[in-house]
Length: 547
Image 1: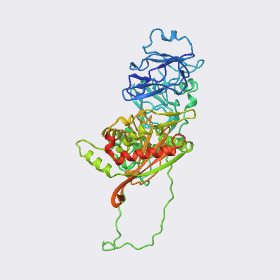
Image 2 (image 1 turned 135 degrees about the horizontal axis):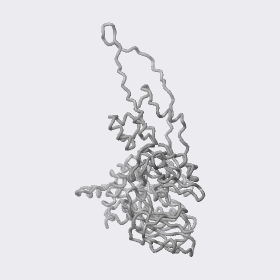
Image 3 (image 1 turned 90 degrees about the horizontal axis):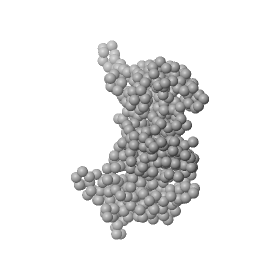
């Protein structure tokens, strides 16, 4: 039976979308997971994948046209199937998907499927909210914090919870109005996409009847927290247990918006609060259970006259208690582990290292940064040099598959950025067409938003080559694991001052080591070496990058 695909809601504020590009045409075979189109929202252009298999029978919104959320986007069904009854002359009007359709949870606001035929229907006004798919690679999510509690009134557009995906922590809003009747996934717990997240409906609705009524939905619900754990978490910690454990790197504190607001209202210093959420995140219950610890006064011993006396000298005997803290793996850390393991053990890596004379690069950078409102880093120069070198060595800009080698005609360079939970790779699209100053501004913007989790999934996808720089940490030389489906990644070390030989004389110079990790299935040793020679030529003569 034909499936109606509607314009999805791809962001929390999206009301309409524009089809930037169709990647399938009418008559094409569509497999579940295929990218149907690129859809431009109010925030970004995102790839929209199919959750159905069949033949693309109809396109309801042409490239460049916009339509409101839930408008007819496409129809997928059996080849030659009659869809005239589904169209009815309303190709661009909002439509309701048939009961059999299984749309993306994100596009439907996380609403669960209607019960299968033969099972009882949900009571009127009751909505089952499921774990949404908030990124194209998301398989499961973790509830970082709930901003509503059972019994609260929920309005359409209210933020229900913060959900941690494999790429970022994102706010998840309600698309329904009612009372929050049930929470299916507790803070800190993880569940697969489409697991029961919450139930919203009229106040006083029997939730147990709702869950049992929805066929198959209750089975996906995550296990509830044991009673002992609930009691333990609700009891305030004793004053003898210090609350001054580290909750952040440096001066940054990881805290949910609700917990931060509660702390401000109660005058609590967040640096004194120990977070019990994922990765030490401070959540609501930490503020509710917080007990200030008064510092004990320490005085020196005194004699009968009241004068202080020296403390007796005793031998020091080390004493303490062994302790281990187990921190639950974040979604980001799980995905990093999975993808890097797959890359390391499926792609045959080999490494090529060269040393680059950076004397002219330092002079050029100084001249550029002397201009008003201009700021270029050495990393920006490396990214620019890589983009130009990839033009001359397209073999390095490839991707491997079992059937064919894909030559990417575009150059999208990923720049590895360290964040508190792990590593993300924002992507500079068409980096070869960008100037040094444009690269500098784009990297600064993307890296800054990545560190505060404001970057979108679309901005971290589609790289064809990656640059990883640890030079700013004083690392002289290192190797990286290839960011698949790329064929190579460049590891950039620190610029060091050292003796160099120029025209037969020893002089003080500045050099930098870079290492290219290559996938031997796509990039041979000679090809990788030629790429590095071109890269060195650009970096040692930066004026050639301005031509």
